[in-house]
Length: 231
Image (cartoon, rainbow, N blue to C red):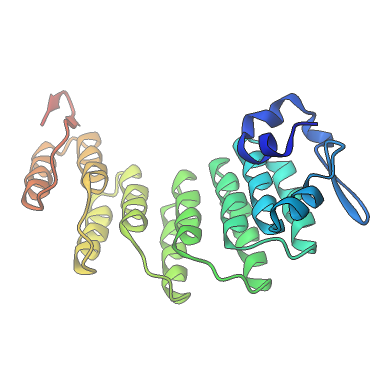
């Protein structure tokens, strides 16, 4: 088994081990790759939660979602999960383009009384956006506000991109205007999503209008392809 320091700091160190045998429970101790890593960490560092999250991050970084979810279940039974834990496993689910899987962990999080933060909701919104579900992304945005969590520039940019990818320029533009009205200055990503969508729809004049608006907001333009032209 790898040394504790290697396990906690180097996700790639897990690659040499069989992920199917990586996590198993032998009461009263947690055994990982044949070594009582968690117990040793608790004694050495006096912080079980910190090491639990480090191990979870290792699994997520290695792309072993099944093992990461198994670890969450094991750690949760021992009260070793927090918002960081949930965000890690939800992010891993989002990367697979499975928003329903993300939602299941979000609901579990709420049942356990763990307070979601901006990162949590941004992950959910991004999961729907990656799945080309703009309506799902907008619903997740509304739930974010219902939870009393403040949206940030990443939140709005993700919803804008979700609409823009569907070629829905007007809807994307409405979200950008809403972003500005909320006092959040758009970034290059927000404008480029709309400009690119205009280009895909063959709306060069509208793309140029958004490019000028981008400059008005003090955002440095990047080269964007508009049909066969560049602006």
